[in-house]
Image 1 (cartoon, helix red, strand yellow):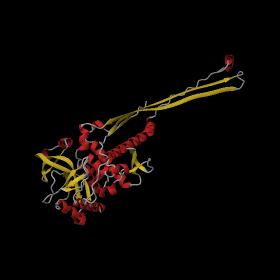
Image 2 (cartoon, one colour):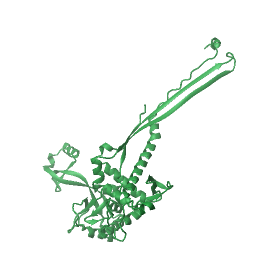
Image 3 (cartoon, helix red, strand yellow):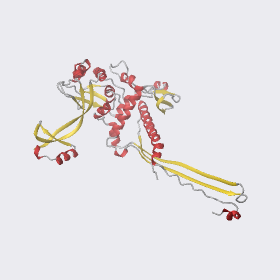
Image 4 (cartoon, helix red, strand yellow):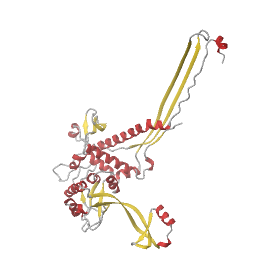
Length: 407
């Protein structure tokens, strides 16, 4: 290349081209996934706590859902360079580089109020008893689950907190049940889970008339082929489902705690387990039974109960702005007996320093202390319960979808 022929032009310009920065999909996930996860979880916790506080003041709760998160990432870059000689090719060279890089995140978040008939049924209707087994399987204590979610067991009443009415005490025996339940749990003598249940069968055929396609078709329809009455030659098509059950070990049944529960609910100890099902009537069984029948609270009922653990500012407590609680001397089984050890919401004038979750309402801060593990566990149990309730027939309000273009 003969540079001496270009001297008369003055300076030599050279362009440096920077390639457009490519958007890297995995890097975007690393930069955004955890932050969005934390943000959604934080607002869900704050919303639930706010609604519990609202119900303490007899206000209607309101839930909204983050239905979608769409974000566009834009990356732009530019750069120029020059080099030249001021005094021919033998003189000193001059050069320079200039460039810029811009990165922008433009999120669009859709927030939808949870309302309508289906949502009302999920929040106002009775909780499904199968949730007891789900929550127990997740590691939550059975005595806390039965204290928080259940209104009565085989006709024995738990305490009740009902919206605009004062809290109502329960039967003294329910307290004995909770104490005995805790004792059995401590010794691993009781479990709550699911058992395969086969309902009435449809037809019966000889085993030699069944082929693999029959078994596959049965599975696809939620049924199973099984020997009829343990006869290996005759098979029947049974309806298949998972049913919640409670099992008490033989050692547990012989313990004082086990005998308390068996006598209280008149359980049939000849049975290997006890079915957990809805209570159809408010009456204690007069003959031995293989079922633990429960009447469940609604999710609003659970929040009403927890709202009684909200500490009130002095002005609100004296001004009768909040729902009253039951007089401690009026009944032996008290709401506070459970809440004193399981849940507490503090109030403060200034933003709390040790808050695990906090919300501002009525010119005051309400918060759960990060150092109170029992309150945190109870609150997390309610969060999981809300997820279970809202997942029922809730295809329109599914978990938020995060869409990230990576072009």
